[in-house]
Amino acid sequence: DGGITQSPKYLFRKEGQNVTLSCEQNLNHDAMYWYRQDPGQGLRLIYYSQIVNDFQKGDIAEGYSVSREKKESFPLTVTSAQKNPTAFYLCASTGQVATNEKLFFGSGTQLSVL
Amino acid sequence: SQQGEEDPQALSIQEGENATMNCSYKTSINNLQWYRQNSGRGLVHLILIRSNEREKHSGRLRVTLDTSKKSSSLLITASRAADTASYFCAFTGNQFYFGTGTSLTVIP
Image 1: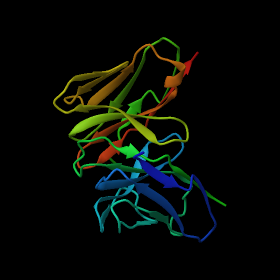
Image 2: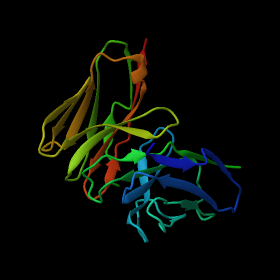
Image 3: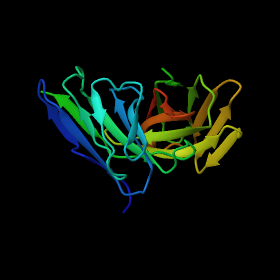
Image 4: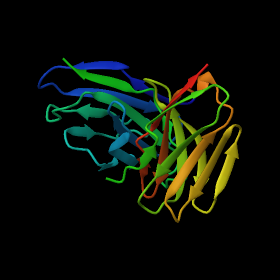
């Protein structure tokens, strides 16, 4: 069954701690995205990657880091520099670099601060 | 920010009624897409309309696009309780940009 898998579903971060959110896809998609969603709001782009070993900052990249060592995987690290990390994080992918196709989304990770 | 605006922010209707939500954007686009999100879940693609199209239908969904006004609308006809969700427009230039969303409640 093809799709995008995000884990964990819930994650708690302590003060000063870095945490990593996992995103894996078996759709053979080139482009992958990370979005942040705050309650009652739309999605804001954190980082995106159009090809392995390359990624670009989105609108709100400060305090986050990513890697794209494999086509299937695009993990997001929320660093201690992100002072307000509590949010719902969504990973997505699309088959073409150009934005002419739909996005496929994972089921999300809810990150909270302890 | 290139985030789009949607209105209304929230909409509550009776089952069987039609629901209309609107999206406005500021940039030139390749296409405009609508997505649905159930509470605490990821988004699911509903329909895509290209910049050279004016109207598109898919089942109970009807989407219109007016590029001169930089706006789009999504109409859900004969709504059902299962349509209760948040709906987001996404417009695409060099990236995907999302609207602020409309929360739809369909009362049985």
